[in-house]
Amino acid sequence: MSKKVDSKEYLFLSAYIRARESSLLTGARLEQLAEASGFDEAARLLTDCGYPDLTGAADAQLEDAFSERRLDFFREMEKLCPEKQLVEAFRLKFDYHNAKVLVKAEGASADGARLLSRCGRVDPEKLTAAFYEDDWRDVPPAFAAAVREARTTLSRTSDPQLADMGLDKAYFAELLAMAGTLSTDFYTGYVRLSIDLANLRSAVRCLRGHMDEGVLRAAVIPGGNAAPERVLRVYAEGVTAVFDDRAAASCAELGQQAVEGAPLAPFERACDNALTEYLTGAKRVSFGPEAVIAYLASLEGEITAARMVLLGKRGGLTPEALRERLRVSYV
Image (tube, rainbow, N blue to C red; front, side, top):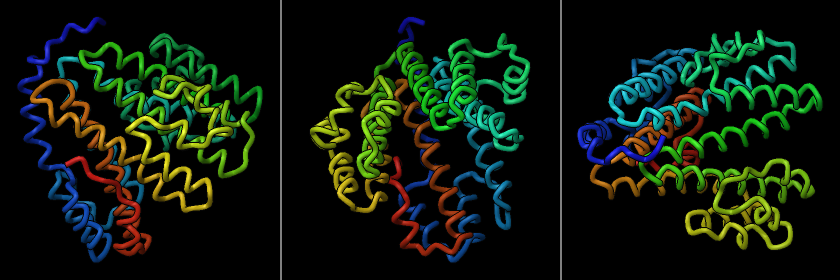
């Protein structure tokens, strides 16, 4: 699809999203959740953001509620968004999650049905049927090819990590292709930064674990601002010299500290916060697809934060421990 959608077609949706953003988890609301006396109080506070009453909910019920909230937002945006492929781009990662579940379940002779997500583009029942019947007519071709390749990789090597790496590369390749069809380059920038940060994480893990260059070469994902061969130069030049793009530079500094023995948590948090910081650029655009991109990405961040707090409360984490884990809020 060529870039023909005029930003004015987003006038209504942009205004609608700006109004809806007020119901998302703000930094102040996250602080309230962290300070809650326990699981049930935190669950009650979440109802102010549109969640159902989750007091007393089991872990499986929590996951169902989070999935339903995400799915409701996707369906709503699909009805309103002038570019349907924008919403599909956010659903894509759940297709690849499901692919990983099916490939690993087959390799382990297990049933992974309970782990499948309904938030992807492809209905999980249809994907499961395609997988086991080897009939891919109702599955997007690029995704189908990636699943078949991952299945072959696991069968050939018995290494689920290699199969996962192949699916990650295919996911980002498909995501970049979808981003290129949109009427804005904002999402392409977001995807490229996401790839950089994924590669930075891989580089830090490899250097910290004294793994050889071959491990990183297998893991590195093409398509970021730092090309794969440049990423591999971390062995000779260090993390900060390679990841010197403005958006990733501060993360690289913490990554280098982690390589030298500092805790990983501040580095991981900085990587997530860098993506949120990128999204704030959407606030400078009065109307257009940028608002939808930031809204859907921040919704995913909200669900991650809500899950983290509720499970942390259930596990007895202190407010201080939760604050150390929470990321910066978009709103």
